[in-house]
Image (tube, one colour):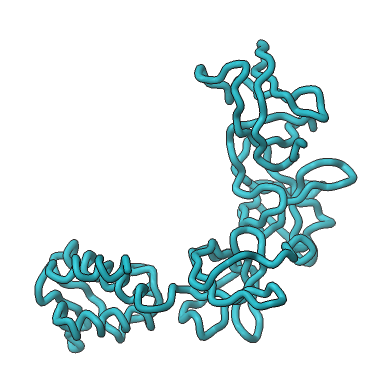
Length: 294
């Protein structure tokens, strides 16, 4: 069955002056325009292509993949606004419509960012966007294990922490105590599963947990110190934002790794100058690589 707004694996059945045609049951056939055809494609081949409506509302195929497919969520840029709604850059030649009726309390201008769900309108059979996130979030309990990496999109806050969407589908909560970063709607990063409750609700961490995290981060610190000539302007008093920008980790995790390295005799903290310096430039890296893989 053809899935509009999703990537489909389809069979090439015909070549024409306009491009290649796919078998697209229950429809007769769908065109892949010449702009996306390569010399390696031939009748009888199966290709993975994205199906969407072109500027004349005809279903066509493309080898390009949008930033989000039907059933997924994304943070997209508004590229134009007219009497119909806002149009979003979603990675395809034709922009994605965010109708006024789906904007909720938001008012968008060109250049704004919008957190949206991508869905197929059952009345028009067109792919559109919606800011009404909750009615599109998956209610299926996800199959995650603690510390699994997930792609996180922050879409709001609550008294407990930050509301998030993980892997473009599921709602999650990042508690305040799990991050020292100041986050905003639209922020995206790799996070980690803390717990999946019996009711399907997901708690996430900003950083991985456990001994492996410290070992892996210690390896990263040693490598960055070596690349910088043995010294960097950081210690456990440094600002969280600066630590995150350089080491992609929280201040808490950074402190744990620095303490571990200091105990191992791999570096020295100079609190008067706020520098960490290698005692032995590269001796500890192989040790921490081995620990990180355990």
